[in-house]
Every structure is written in C-alpha cells, then in structure tokens.
Length: 174
Image 1: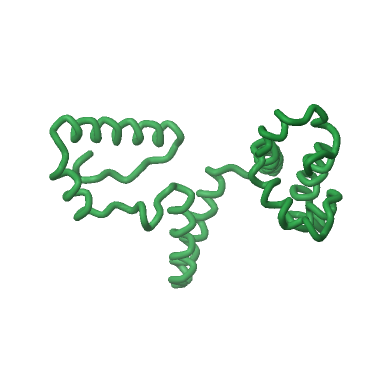
Image 2: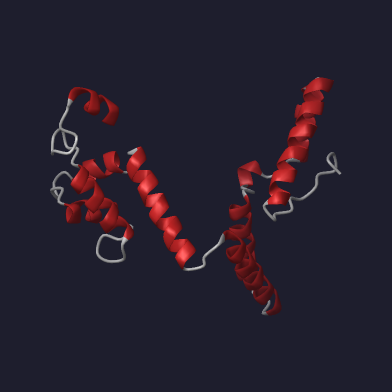
C-alpha cells in the first residue's frame, strides 16, 4: 500500500493519504522510549499526533511498514547492545535460573527456564523431533533426497556451532 501511495503522490514529506513522515518518526520514538507509549502502539500513535478515533487503524498500517519495523528493530538492538544484553548472556542466565530451580526443587521454575531456552534456540513443540514422523518421511525419500537432507543437517549444525550453540545430535546424524 505504501508503494502505491508513493507512485501516486509526489508529496512524501507532507501529510497526504495518511502518510506523514514526521508522525511516523514520532510514533517510532514514542513506541521505543520508556514512558506513556512504550510498547503500546495505539498510545504511541496518539502521542505521535494521530487522532484517537483512527489510532487503532493507523497502528495496523504503521506496524507493517517495512521502514518503521526496521527502525524499531534497530533501536531495540542498539538498546540491548548498550545494556550489554546478548543472546549468549541470556542463555547463561537461563541456565543459572534452571540450576537454581533444581537446587530448590522448584519444578515449575526449571520447566520455565527450559522452555525459554528452547524458545531461544528455536526448538518449538511443533518443530521438536518426532522420530515416528521422521522415519515415515525417510521411508518415502529417495537415496538422493536422504543424502541431501544429511548434508543440510550437517550444514545447519556447523552454522550453529560457529555461533557457539551446539545442537543435539540425532541418531541418524551421529
């Protein structure tokens, strides 16, 4: 939709068809700065100057805008870097929380820490290894497809290892 707007209008910097660059910048600022509109898109839109009546509609348009999404992601990444917040540190903290929960015999805390670690590492319930499904898929594959799958799995493992993450090894890959 934004590209269509840009093709039809030569006044990108002006308020036309609802696209106002200054309001967009103000929205990003309000959305990413602690305060009234922090992580509340509707409130951030109102702070940026959009009317309360149309704020919900504008938010859906603003949050899918590629430029706005990139700006929000960059600001959050910069804040995380300034705070020394890294993925590796978060994984270490979760491991510490899990160890503490085990020592205190707090099963729910241990499960929560494991769940968070799995989420960070990309192991989701629906994506978790299912040996029966995998065997069924493998039975339908040709030898060439099986070899390609093995190579791809090794490559993914190498990429993870280079990032300091050691994936679990399946029986097939071992």
